[in-house]
Each structure stands twice: as structure tokens, then as C-alpha cells.
Amino acid sequence: MNKKHVVKKWEVSLAELENSVGNLFKVTRRLPELAIAETKMFRSKDRALKQFNEWLK
Image: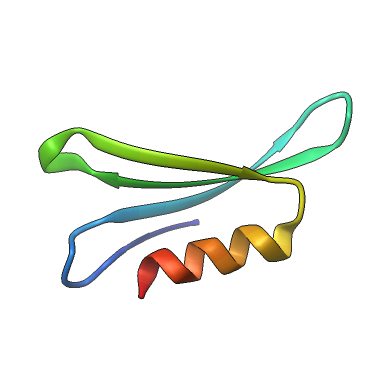
């Protein structure tokens, strides 16, 4: 899932990753003009969605 923030021009993405332990959810926000990115990893999909929505505010 990818979305762009309307004013701040952040690109925010949510990805689900699988490993031997279980699933991880990766939330990344990126500012392409400045080559800046921030990533957070979550075990809970609810927490990942909360962070995703918070970054879009």
C-alpha cells in the first residue's frame, strides 16, 4: 500500500514481510527530493496501520 501526503510530499508505504518466526509489517516514509527515508518495523498489523495513518496526517 502506497500513498502520498498532500502537503508535505512524503511517500508512505506499508509492506508485509514473512520470515521463519512470523510476519513483520514495515512502514516507510520517504522524501524523494532529499533522499531521506524513515522505516519502522512492527509485529502487529494494527500498530503498523496506526503508524501509517499517523504519518499521513
